[in-house]
Amino acid sequence: MNTELKHWKVLKSEAEYKEALERTIEIFHTEDNTPEADELDLLLVLIKDYEDKNIHIPSPDPLEVIKMKLTEKGLKMKDLEPIIGSKGHVSSVLSGKKELTLKMVKKLHDFLGIPAEVFVTTNKSAHI
Image (cartoon, rainbow, N blue to C red; front, side, top):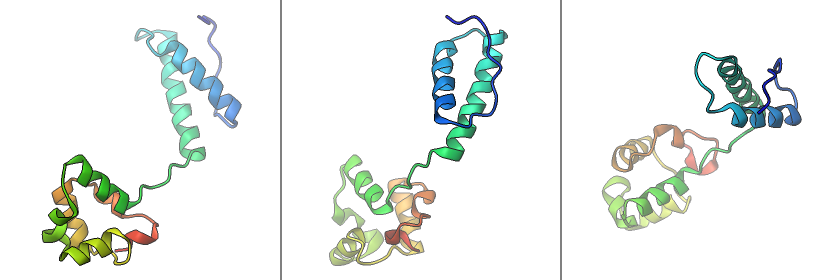
């Protein structure tokens, strides 16, 4: 284990990011109230800052999330009829031919437990 503490600074390259990750893993289980614990706290902040600025995770497609939740809960498309409308309307919405309405989003949120943020994306299938 490297016992010499490094003076960390804002991470500006992928190489610095990877080095910080390696060091974080190395000292992750350190005891509280030690210089390594302070270093770990700092590294976690620096890594989060780098990831927030440089790593972009695409928003999930709301229609895919709905389908996944149906599968997860053992439900079928017909179970959405009270929420979305007729069988044909459910099919049109889930295929992206018809748009979700705010009323549908609220009901889907309540029925399937999908966070409302999932529906607030720039994906063309999710305009409300």
